[in-house]
Structures are given as structure tokens and as C-alpha cells.
Length: 98
Image 1 (cartoon, rainbow, N blue to C red):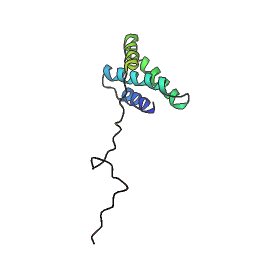
Image 2: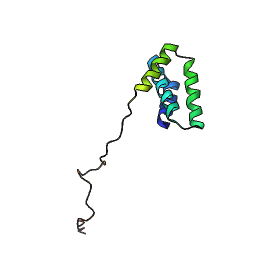
Image 3: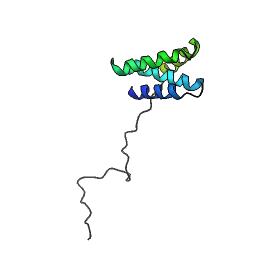
Image 4: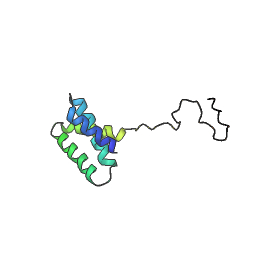
């Protein structure tokens, strides 16, 4: 949820066009929906409030619908490594040759 807030504020502050503002509103809605009460929630609400001055009612509704349809990405369960499988701790360690 904090990432949603970060995206909302970044896009709102740097928007080059209406599409970026719509994305900012989408992430503001997601932040408001998912953040617990507190300072970040207040920031998300303030961001959305600023966006309501720059977007039409129809655009805000579109952003809200987009937020409802949002499917977040999840990291795969595989570990990132140089080897295809994690090393087995019971295997004998290679001997160092000095």
C-alpha cells in the first residue's frame, strides 16, 4: 500500500498528460483502500483531493473502476541465485587450494 501512495504522488507531481493523472488517481484509490489509518492514509487522501481538481468526474470514475480491477503482481517463489538450485547445506564444501 505504501508503494501505491508513492506511485500516486510521483505520477500526480510529474504528470505530462491526463493518462498519467488517471494512473495517479488509480494508485491513490488503491492506497486509500489498503493503507491503515494514519499519516500515509492522510497523504493518500490529500493526493486524491488534489487530483479531483485536475480530473473530471468521469475520469475519476474511470480511475476508481481501474483500481477495482487492479491485479497486483507478486514476486515468484524462486530465489534469485547464480545457481539453478539452492545449495544443499549437507553437501561437502569444496576444498580451497592455496
